[in-house]
Image (cartoon, rainbow, N blue to C red; front, side):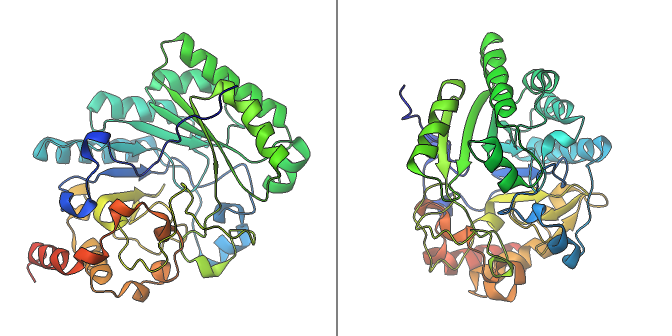
Length: 353
């Protein structure tokens, strides 16, 4: 079996647009957005903040499922922004902190975004445990382009050890196989990317993962553990040292300016807006789409201040960003450090400063 399949890079620009990020700034419409259908999960994975109830309770993070009405309001806001500037999102990610399939209207959410033509690609990430045949058909018919399936280990025993709640590896295999075969039968719009985190996997375990999922995935990869934002809060890497970021890019440990604030937004289940998708602590809130429109958040004073702090080399004044490991693993073409002065002038002028 040929397992040398191309890995999907969540941050990659289309091939016709692979230029340094600074040349594309400022974006009038975010390059991509995350919208969290639910910030709760049926797993309690050791490497994930959402799996640590005690940690979340200590910071007072709420739990819940996004209402369909709020979601439609967000897409309507996005449509106004897209129509004004003529640029769609490159990617709409319907996930952030939790398991998206906990939201019973996930397929409808994708369909509503598809109907309103606000994005080039609609994507999600799931652990696959809730991916029944009925839900698989829902995702296909909803119009998803990509679903990433996170495999947690390669035996039922190890699944329970990692997730704390789930122990049916064979069912996960069946779920992914059905999704793949049904998608292909219906024309193959939906592409399946299966991935596993290297939690200290042996060579034999890595080979088993490839063998079990290679034939029912369009792309497949072994990812690295990451430290998330507020990386000093807890060792989310489980003591496993990595020289690359989660998506395989070399760690640029001296990076000062994070590209996320200039290209993306992440909407939490309750409508509050984080700067990036790894803000598990809600420490980068820059707006609230329950009471604000998307355009006012994207061009608003809180996000503007956030950008300027990064460009001035003052990232460590933001607690969530101070020791964030995630920003070190972005590709070279997203590096903004060398253009910070030029960008500072652009964004300062935009702020009327």
